[in-house]
Length: 291
Image (tube, rainbow, N blue to C red; front, top):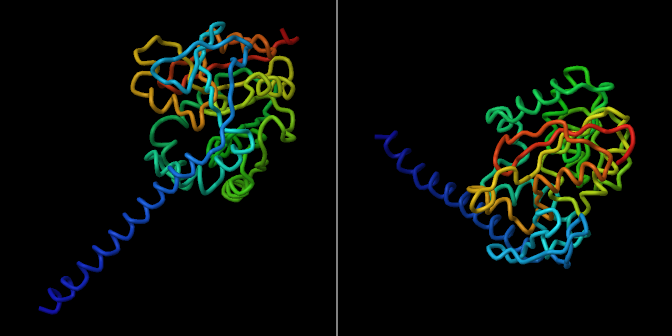
């Protein structure tokens, strides 16, 4: 009888805790939506390549480049807003929760379980490198750098937000620099990594020019970004909504565009991987001279 009474007493307590937890999550999601709506935006009327834009009827906030065929966010958040957007609390917690993604503390487990970490490691293992110095831009929780460090690589990471950088450095024991790349002092390297980062850059050309400066001839860069390798309808198919996220994605690349970007910045495309829709990959080699 006593057990029954305790159970009856605990049941409403558990229910109240559950409702409180749901209420907190709902409040956090509403707050995240409001913060996104408050982002101050600018205006862009041309592509990174200089091409003019034509309307993209199914996503009016984007235009389609007449020259390279890529998609351009015509109402991008102002550069000074990006530091706030990619902060530890907003980006790595409230926005991840809003999108149904794990928060930063749980993303290492996700990257291991869904196969992406093993795939990334296989790309590195297949690359012929001049040395073992690695820089990763947008290293997040740092699991890839940690794995590479265990394999004998000398690793440095970069995160926009100082709090995120400090957290990742504490978790991994690796040097993690804070700042917007390019614009943060990064050591030279033999392998440059950027997974799901280039589409967020205000200047893709400036981004890869700086990557080329850090690399010796023969150095490699592995870039993961939405690249339209396949002509799907709508573009990127089931990943259409997430790909055309105009709060974050400033440029979405065509095959022609990513090849042009590589040539302009001193790289050649040595491999491409249609790994997952919206997360396509190119492997680039730094040429002897910028083309």
